[in-house]
Image (cartoon, helix red, strand yellow):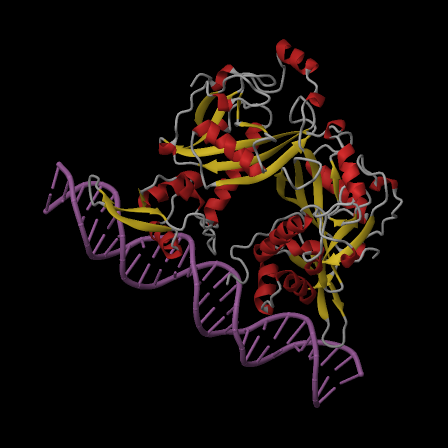
Length: 265
Length: 265
DNA sequence: ACAATAGTGTCTGTCAGACATTATATG
DNA sequence: CATATAATGTCTGACAGACACTATTGT
């Protein structure tokens, strides 16, 4: 009740002399902030299974354990948290992806033995056929906290959920996977896992792998075609029997949120 | 390919001597982490409008500007990020709420003049009739970064979205509001804004205030009653005309996700 | 009795599920 | 031409929207 909206000018333009003095004297190093990292659950379909990229930690803590790739914000290179996540993705896979999003942020006093720590968890979906094998000695895989090599390994998510991962990474993986599964029920998100061209049957199989249930062919095609999420390339894929029309992702970047979820039961 | 799942024991149990040595020598103070805060968009229905709690900043930077309440993780008191958010809520309103959730985390080099900063944005829904006016001199409103009083002010969200808020708080408010509006379309989330007892007409009005559209009475009642989200208290509210049955929230803590969204158009 | 609000009956439209049917390749 | 897979036709069921209708109170 004491501040009128009109009485203040837009922040941060200008800045009073007092504010400038404050900022000149301010030194972040005087304050202890939680250890903050960005962790990635990078998914791809490999050998007809949903797999997640893990790294073997080459440094303490949890040295030798498998972990989700991640690292610290590089203040000189990353303009935003999404940029940090994107950088991590490219470092590990050599490719970029439109299908990169924040899942949630987990922070607690006990999740890392170094002290109160926070991780901003993201997931990324990639087309496994586009992966560029990363040289382990690649300088870009070094981070401010890690100057050694990290061995990359893909593992089926069902195995990874049973493995002893570093820190709370099994829980983080479960959260990322939960988000992916949920969004698969009401969006066209799994398009992010497909190669440039694919058949609708192949796309349906990917949905089925993620959800762990069989889907109705007719409903599935109707949804995606009516929404304009995919478009025919004009070519066909010849197999042993009737050839299948090839499709590509249409209107990439669109979200394709469907009005009802699949398998609501 | 080089690490067998079986070859590692569960983390963090045990911990090798080398790991213990590493942790003994490790000092977080040597690393510069982004400035990390938890910010809150606390919503309530006041005067038939959706309002948000703002504070007038009493310290630099952005001194004098209105801002979403927030602050640093208190490593000695907060076990998790949710605990930090909950503590902030209680400090500002004097009450607790089951309807407190993380929205997203925003981080960039430019959002705070002190340097690379991150905020973990949450929203909370409260029953305005339960608010305990907080003494401005309440010691618990002091944080490690702020030892002065903060003036609390409720403002209709539509006004707040046009006001000059500190930092990027107008954007944060828009994000929290977007989440609230979206979830209002397919969950029973606005129950968090209701008093202990209410009529279905009152509840419908709250939904309408949030969404900014009129809803169909029959559909609205059918949804909530069929889902078991509310239950009759057995009492009625006498007004000028036909009395209305009073309801309370049923199965609090349940999420009540509906199979279809409202006003999908 | 009338005005105003609470509450119900019931029809329609949309879209996912089920499943039968037709289409088109290859061997 | 037999068979496997691709692709379509069409009926059903669940549930939101529309809106007319009935119910119950105070004045």
